[in-house]
Length: 523
Image (tube, rainbow, N blue to C red; front, side):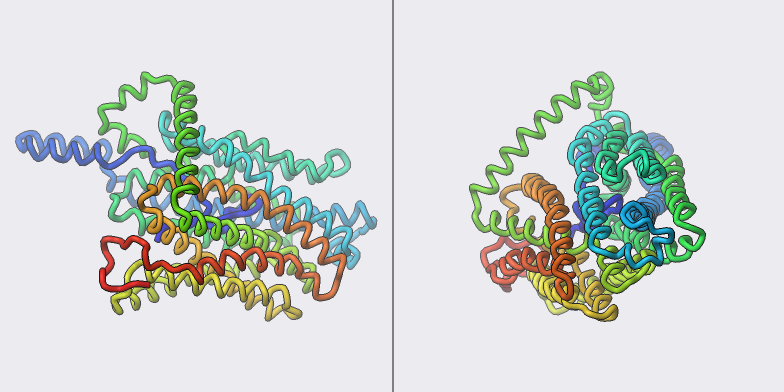
């Protein structure tokens, strides 16, 4: 199953994987060169030595993956810390503006509907607008990576994340000059680098360049745990750093992003591993960058519209399943955007304490990824369960648990029950790869690229829709009060349920089987 990246909110990377990366080169060029070497044994030793010296993937293997893994940790650690501390700073500013509070951390008026309602609007719309640069600029930066290399784009994208953080600090540092809703405009700075998902995309692309195809899936799974580790570390880090004050803590969190930028300086370039072996490399240099951007974008748009038309009008089963992903993605997003704010409001926690709860969820995700899911798959393989049936069981089990978790979170009247619900919701880390693996199997005749492009379009729709819906639900819940404070959890559950029903009730008997599965079993 292919891992999902994220969906992430704020500067964080979601969990969830909603991850895009460009892999411009194929392995065909490498295979051609290998055949030529076999046909010319007298030149093999000299040429092979030269190739090892110049672009051997294994020479860069450990350094690339180790630094890439560190980069992933910083890419998740810094935004998670930054957003949590920024939320507390915003809450304090609003409390001072509305109530003239001198100590917002202990003033109960900071938890009233007026402050929390405005805060939820600012945070949810900020998360929505942060998505737009990635949607708009990820394709041009991907094409630029094909021309100028992965490393320059990775460094520029990480620099853009640092500058975006500085812009947020600047707005909050002078609240008497800048309105807080100016944070919605701040993502325009992400034109530099294309937003927080582009560095992730580049690291995946660099790993894909250097790692053999047979090991690629496993490497991606291991690399994705770096994002989980970053989230896991962010909670305790905030808890201890916040004691030094909000502003020192937020500058320290930005410092981790700077460390991530420094890490990218030492990551080796990998585009040469592929391009030097291709006869078209000289053509690449002769073709102007603007021409490649223009023709590449036009070709991509043409293919995307054709692919979407073919999928949605040719196979109603695939169409129905894709729409189930839309319901599930929107439900997940609504349930996770303001988990920390909800916990702080409902159970009178500080923001660092609320951050620890999300770290518990990340720890659970890490355990699911490294222990529970591999163990379950091993048991099913030993029982000769077909691979597609494994995906079906995992998807159905996880989506049912997720619905129950959201219901528990909305009903929770004590912190223990809420933490249990949050821990149960960690199954979305296993749910999304299973659903996408099922979709690729169902739509094998449509082509993986066409299917994934359709999913990415719906992912973007889900992210744009979920922010305003969540903010409206949270404000309405605060107006109604009492148990209705968790209204947005019930809204998330209701949106999630149609997708869950499709996954649970859909019959997969006629779905094409994978080559590595037995032919005598059906799901």
